[in-house]
Every structure is written in C-alpha cells, then in structure tokens.
Length: 118
Length: 229
Image (cartoon, rainbow over all chains, first blue to last red):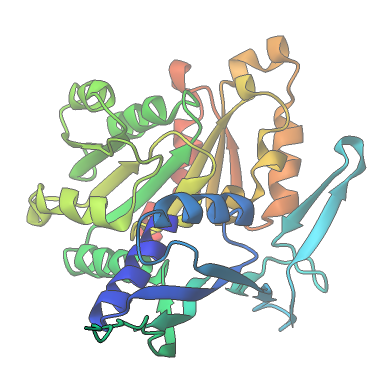
C-alpha cells in the first residue's frame, strides 16, 4: 500500500516536472487494515533518495458509516466488548434491530492532495 | 582586473497544491468488479477461500471438489508464496488447477486473479474456487471478484482467532470452523468460535467441519448456496 502511494505521488510529480514533493495529504478509512504507524514507517523508507524525501505525510482518518437495510439505521460502526480479554472489537450487528449492517464508509484509502515544488 | 562574479542564485521554485483524490484501494476494487463481470458473462460462480496457514483451506477445497465435480465444471486457483504443493493436491481430483505464486505478497489481489483467469478456458467452467494465501489479515482487504467469501478457522489455532481478526470475519459470507475432531484436546469449543463470529458478523453462516475426515462438507456446500449465486 505504501508503495502504491509513493508510486502515485511520484508519477504525479514527474508529470508536473516537480523538483520535490513537500506534502502528501492522505485519507485512510478507520475500517481498512492499514496501521498508520507502519504506513508512516514504510513511507519514510520508500521515499528515501526520491523527490518525496523529507515530504510531510499528513494522514486524515475517514470515519466509518454503516447502513441497515432492515431498519434503515445509519451511523458509525458499533463496537462490542469482551471484558474477559479486555478486548473491544467492531461488529456488523445493527444497534437498533440486531440485524446485519452494510459498511458504506470507512474502507477507503486515497491521496487527497499533494504539494509540489517545481 | 576584477571579475564580475557570476552568481547562480538558488531558485526557490514555485509551490503548487494539487488536488488528486487518487484512490489507492479503488484500483483493485475496479479490477475485482471487472473480474466479476467477466465471470458473470460466462455464467461462472467464484468463491474466495481465506484462512490462516494450515487451517485446512486446501483440504476443504479437495472435499468440495470431490462432492461437486460431477455437478459443475470446476477450476481451482491456489494462491501461495511459492511451490505447487496445493495445486498438485487438488489436481489429483481431476479438475483444472492454476497455481498463483505471489512471490512475496501475503494475499491474492484482483490483478493476480485476472491473470489466472486468462490461463483457463472460461467457456468450459461453471465454478472457480480461489484459495487465498494463508493469512487472516490482508486478504480481507483485497476483493478478487468472487461471489462468496469463505473463511476457514481451525480449533488448533486456539480460542481467540475470531475475536483477534474481526475485519476478515466481517467480510465472510460463510465461516468454517475446522478440525473439530481436535476440539476436546485443544480445549476449544465450537460454540465459542461460533458465538464470536456471530458477534462480529450476524449474517455470516457458521459451519463446523473436520476436513481431514471429510465431515461437514455438505453443510459447507449448503451454506455457500452456490445455486442461488
């Protein structure tokens, strides 16, 4: 994923004859598997000796939203607790009717904007 | 005589803000949708089979193939980092197999499946079983274009596997709890894993099995509802 991000920005930078990239604004959904710390770490490694080196990676988190076809509930994904293991986990159970909900937001990962120096 | 100094001044350049809205995951989703359309055009149903390393994905596939090969013309795609061990196992059952070696990637993606689809004669198939790379994390993120997603989890992985990996279980239409013949020795209850799955995803169908002993295969096939795809 980090590689795709870096490649996408590099190709944009090349297209615009940019000398360096100053900032990359990324949006990451809360329901993706992406760990932000690992993502930042990989970004640093991958951008070394490229025009992206020293660029600032800003990450905005996209909130989750689910929809229940049964009772028309719409809201953020719910979490349940398992006190025995001190665990909080997300659930697709509808908080209103107990049915299954669909995820409508929070699974995206996109580059919102980049700041380039020509 | 004094030289007129030539000074090359550092050019600060111009700074541009560019709106991109370039989606990173969408490329895979678009390709997955193309795979699905291609399969639909040929009337082929596809199932993405995910689960940990050693959970019993290949054994389950062997059992399903054995049961359904007279009813459907089947192909199996086996995803692994390397080797053709799984593909060789499945090939013994007389169906077409394609080994997808990812090299270093821990999951299959729509691009790898698109390539495998070029390796088979789509006109001669009704059902494709896609065995994902053994992993309970990344495969969930990458859709392949399959009609159903199945996750295999075995009792030998311990009692916490479902709760520890909620995201992949959210993706599942069917969850197979395998190796039930070892449940007692492991001190893991089928009902606990079933309850954990239902807490995360109330729509997933949970089926118990012992793939090595060919137990539970019919229930898995029923839960997949292949004919209603």
